[in-house]
Image 1: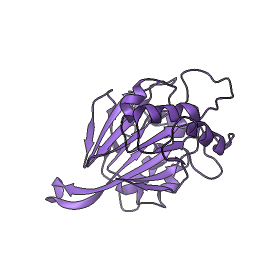
Image 2: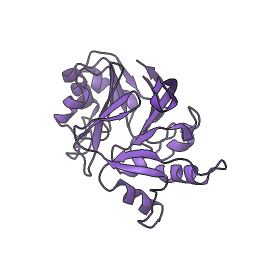
Image 3: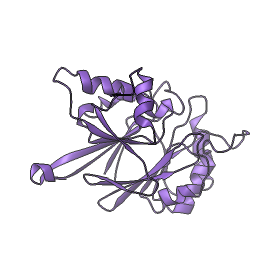
Length: 260
């Protein structure tokens, strides 16, 4: 499994990165092609600015599915541009691909582009609703959504591929559900939007320390801190996490690649 950080800025695009978007790739046979090996690609979130950056890493038309953790703009808004790309590309309208998200995803994205409810974007995307704890298989990937703690319906993802596990918190406040997402994952991609020194509202985001605590309790192999807003100093988030997790820790950077 190969993870590419397409965008990792928290809450809005930052000076060095688009908002949240993460590309996963793995080679596996395709039954529809008689078992021929190919690269399967899924995208986790498509926040503001991420579609343009995605061109640097792969053909955006090559996605097999998109999974949206929740419907805040910094995690889904570039789906409106992706709709344009798939509908009006010079090579012709592209085949529908599955898009998984919270209830109402299709209507939310149609409204964002000022489209009527019918057909909305349903001629370009096949919308599917997340169901807590129920895995979805796309090629070699088995992705299980878990509802987490955020002001809108939001999900963390546990993605398994050939014995390896990526855990992604999405946006969430502290919740025991994160242990289901992350337990013994090879890599935990955890948001760290708040600082311990501040008075933070509940049920919204994790601090760097809280992300580190999840990593320690879940016994993950590696922690990557993401979704750090541009108004915060990133090294401070790293220090908070290191105080409670003694495994390898990285700060997510746009363009960084992890293979495991």
